[in-house]
Length: 320
Image (cartoon, rainbow, N blue to C red; front, side):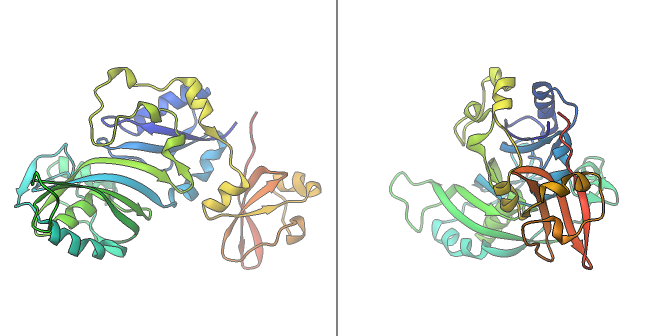
C-alpha cells in the first residue's frame, strides 16, 4: 500500500541514509524523497512509498517552513558549520539588522551555495568543488512569504539596544521551493555589513505536513543544541507506521491539485486507461491545472486537460 511517510531526520545524517528505516518498517523497497535536507540540518522529511512515489513532483513544489540560527562574524565555504572559515567580519549592530531584514521578504534573487546539489553540466556543484573545480551558479528567483525573528543573541549583558552587537539570530522562514536558507543567511550578513553562516537549520513544515506529526520528532534535541544521544539513531518501526498517511481530498487541495470525483460506473474504465470524457466526473474540472481523481474518498490517479482533451498523468493502483 502506498503511503505518505513523515519522518524527522536527525542532524549529521544524510537524507538518503534514513530511507532504510522506512523501507524496513513498511516492508517495501520503493521509498522516495520529496526534498532532501543538508547533512547538518534536521527536521521534516516527507517520504512516499509504493505507488504514491508518483506524487513526488507535486509535494516537492510545496512551500517550506524553516527555523534557522544565523551566526554573524564568520562565513564558511559551505555556509554551514561543516565548512572552513573563509571570511571574518565585525559583528553587525541590531539597528543595521532591523533596517535590512524587510528587504528579504517577497520575491528575491539569491545565488545558491557553491556546495549544493545543483547540477552543472551533469554533475553536482558540490562534487565539482570537492574535485578542485570552480563553479559559477546563476542567481534564481525565490519567494520569502514570511521572515520572523524569534530570538536575538547579542554581546551586551543588558537589554537589547540599537547599538548592541548581534552574534546570532534565530529566524523562522516560510519560503518557496528552491530557497536556500544558507544563502539567505549569507546575504543577510552581507547586507548588515558583516558576514554569516547558518549554524542550525530545522525544517518544520512542507506544505500541509508538519514536523510535530513526524516519526522521530520527540527524539530531536531542543533547537540550537547538538544531539549527543547515540541511542536516537533509529526510529521504531511502529512509530513510522503510525506516522503514515493516505492521500486524501484535503491533502490534494493543500498541494495545489484540484480534487474531482469520478462516477463509480466509470471507475473500471479509468483504471484501464480508456479515453476520458468530462461526463465521467461529478465535479467540475478546472482548466490549466492538474486534477486528483477520487472515488468515494479513495485516491485513483491524476489527470490534466490538454487542448480540450483529458490526459492521464498516472493511474494509482494500490497493490494491497
